[in-house]
Image (cartoon, rainbow, N blue to C red; front, side, top):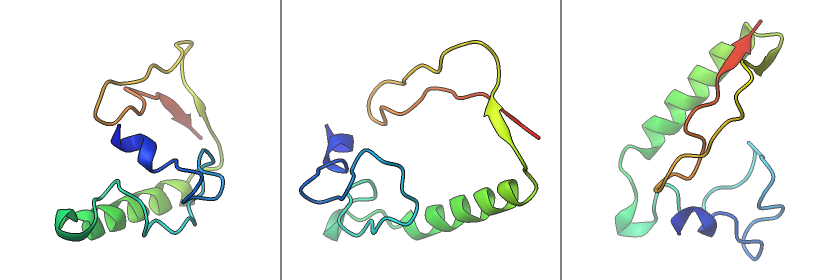
Length: 87
C-alpha cells in the first residue's frame, strides 16, 4: 500500500506524527524520478496558500457534529470527510 511507504521509520523520524516541516524529498506521495507528478509543486503551493489564508483569520477550529470521522477507501486511505467549525 503506497501510503504506508511514507510512514517508514527507517526513512522518517516519527513517521506517524504530523510534521509540516518534514523533509519530504524521500516521500512517495508525489512520486519520484520519472514518476514525479508534474503538478506537485503547484499543488503544494496551492495548499500552502489556502492554509495560510484560512489560519490567518482563524482563532479556533473544532470538529463539527457528533459523527466520528470515517476513513475513505484506497487509494488515499485518509478521511472521507472531516467537518470542521472555524471561529
